[in-house]
Length: 306
Image (cartoon, rainbow, N blue to C red; front, side):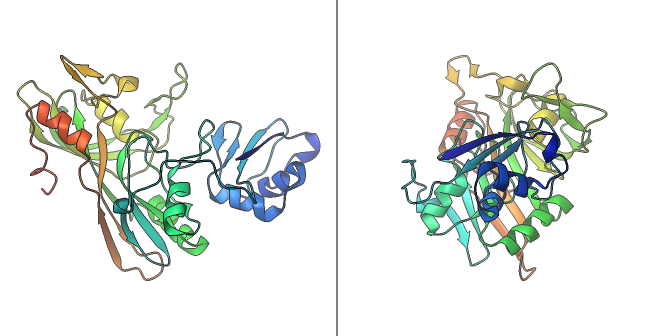
């Protein structure tokens, strides 16, 4: 994958981002728009998908471009069993843990849109994301019209999400709704925290089961889509996720090694972007989550359907 590293000068002040990329990067505006749609543009280190965003002098812009005329670098193929649904407008997948939802500054290849496009035989556009270590249900758009409608559904909260988490302790209280804004932790880059000046963030939660040693299976229902939202909110409730060292969750329990952050997007419900018909996608519980739960004395199979 080809990269462009650009810096805006005084003469670029106020220019649209897509036009700036095209002019300074020596590519067509269509290529710039495709990179933006794919989530492959980073403005001063933050992903930006808004073509009309005004550039300011001093801005750093990094663009990840797909190289024409060359086969992409080898990446682990997505098994067809991961495809939950597909039509002409969208496709839903059960994302494996470890696969990024979009291109990142450190990951050019092997992200979900690329693997999904290989499986479907055509391009797809990301409209929401799961953290790299989170598994489960993700929807991708197959047209720009569908992408706009799906993105709106996530922004307006008409997409209902249900997650299953394994936590080091049960949250206190055992169920409820937490409404606390989140923002970047100024002392620890890459970490989020409850911050009064942050973005609104709301999560419903319910404790499903508590194991003999106090670990718990928890259902989380985020009403907003902030970075690390479930992880931060549950940690704030005294229930950090197993495997989530960033927010205080243990990576090992006695002889049990926790392979990743124990979070799975179990169910996703949203209106079809073209017809408005209700859609519901469910991703089966992954083997690693089941294995950790079983070792803790928690039976997940019966809980997932409650």
